Image (cartoon, rainbow, N blue to C red; front, side):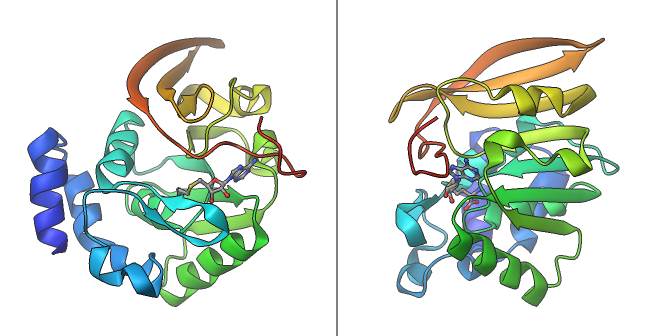
Length: 208
Ligand code: SAH
């Protein structure tokens, strides 16, 4: 089922990097979904996880991963750990992944799974990802998997020179995926795909 997902949902839609395709072959998506959805783990859509959140559609995970243009030495920040699946894919393609989740239940569950599956280059914490993770900045790449109405300044500040960030920006439920690049301290932005993500929330549960 995993091979079929890679061939029909990812490769057939233009993701051709052998490293990325291999990452999707390696990571067992069925370990990241709720038990009641295990038979749907390789389907072509997002699935519900705890706390009213979702694990993203495989193609979207692949598209965002590709847009980051990762190198093996890169240090990556993810905002919105959720199930941990996107972080697991990133961990196959770079040096280290730092991932932040606002719901303690999700953050703990994902961290336990990273340990169980031996993903030792993924570091996770529970907190408000709007603020990034300054102790480990700067990051060569930043991926945001929940949607704010504007790009958080702390994330721009924590992007390394030459760094890339991909983030769904807009008001719920419709957003654009925006790709940013920092060159000589100047950030350039372009819209790359219309998308639908869950909103970025603050500690009170309000939308950013
Ligand atoms: N990358 C995840 C997708 C999860 S959906 C995966 O592969 O499964 C987005 C996640 O962002 C949700 O788990 C949601 O709780 C989380 N989130 C929302 N607002 C956040 C914030 N301010 N900081 C960190 N995480 C946040």
